[in-house]
Length: 97
Image 1 (cartoon, one colour):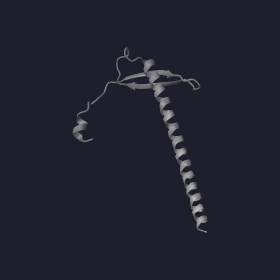
Image 2 (cartoon, rainbow, N blue to C red):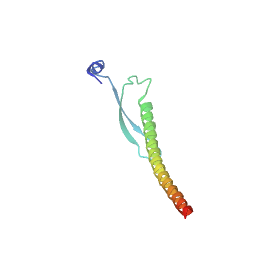
Image 3 (cartoon, one colour):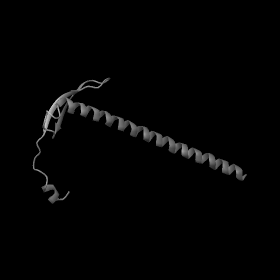
Image 4 (cartoon, rainbow, N blue to C red):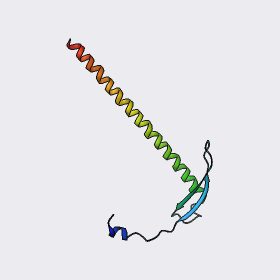
């Protein structure tokens, strides 16, 4: 970002701070503090924002789990591919005899 673009941004932003408990079955309830630019509490209540935060956190955990599983699958597939290559090399060597 260059200086001209930086100067187009406001010098401050008004935010709303809220605290609420996020509960999820099987986990301890946690108190979270959120800061949002959604200032109207009638349109977006504290409870609603805390619930959205909890759901987003759950999605982040699922994405992390999927990445771990994909890495494991890729690693296993790479090992399988190398093993298949060794088998075919062995077959080719035996057929030349």
